[in-house]
Image (cartoon, rainbow, N blue to C red; front, side, top):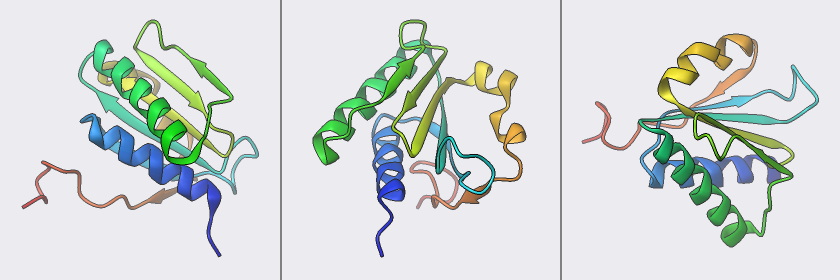
Length: 125
């Protein structure tokens, strides 16, 4: 059986990778919270890149699945953009802001989904 929430998460991951976001993390949180099934977290090197990644995710989600976010927060500042797609919540961070908030530690009980090696990373041939 297909998982529509995982499909949304996979589209978000692919869009973030296309715009060179790094340190991508997908957490399966459905057993620790009722607000979503997955949290996606990624980092960017500048506030402009944060905004560009968020916009690219929005465009890809609309084009590939006709998904529209229920809400978007932080797009103007470009330090932390939160995009709520219902079952999937995407967090796009400027790296230093991500380090400060450390969401992964807050959701330590969540299952980490293996996304494979990041393109251009040490395991990428």
